[in-house]
Length: 232
View: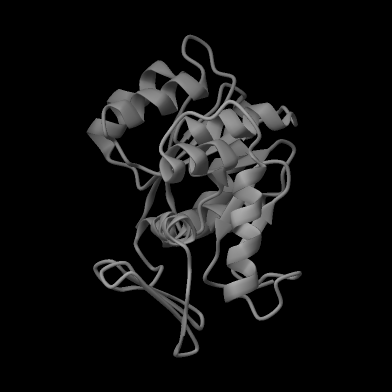
């Protein structure tokens, strides 16, 4: 049975999450303070953490940052009562795998948990080291080659690096800043539209309907993610 750690200082939210996650077949651990998380993770080894942004003592952003600094890769879904875009972006850039804004439906939360667990368990099809299959798209980092339905597609170096980074983080929402830092290789304080331009080029070359992409998805106000399951 997969184990979930829920950390929130609102008892009603904790009870709601605990009930619905147990009904979905998960074992649930709970906590109400950010300072507890590191010890609980190391002692009980949860498969995923649901972490409230606003916690007493140490907030969710700080907790997530500390987990990643200690190279603890347990997936994190950030809960926030705030709807501001900046909070979602900060959470993702601190290492959260996904976010959900209160109020939320328990059904949506369970679906998000299962999606994050699927990708953390490497269900995204890396057919061999450095080779990914996304629907009809095959990306071979060893040969620096991309094929769509068996036909080779020419990409620029930067397009290939961008696609490779998306593949390595499939199903994870990536902000434009993250893509700039990891693909372009520097902190970028200026216009992030360079990412949008390259994403548009990738869609033109890889998607059958670039205006309604099936695989390289826009997450409005945040960035992009590469999906491999339901194309809708």
